[in-house]
Image: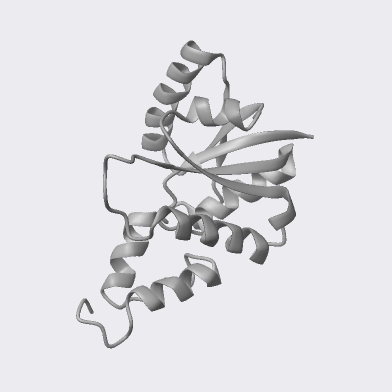
Length: 167
């Protein structure tokens, strides 16, 4: 059994992310999800600590909570992977454009650290989901319950109440 690191901003985690986490657990046994952030930048819909809680909640809803750890980290993903004693970094792919971006990062990470990246394709019915679109749809009153775990849908409902000014 190995541990792999799945880095990202996860603002918020959605079902495509959770699919990658689930695949990682099935293939490697344990996944550490690293909420990567930049201390110099403010922003994001959810604070880092809340994102971490939502990821833990989503893993619990999926029945894999005992095989998923959640950490936060600024800086480089390769440093987070080393700190977590990860064997690999895992990344999800939705499209050819994702591959181009991820391949450049993977080759750079390998050249700097020797850390390999494993790509996990998302399920066909999850390929369109992005955190950016989830945030936008929720902000303007659309339903995202088919794109996010229940705990995230609840957090978005609290963030954007039905009678809110953004809707």
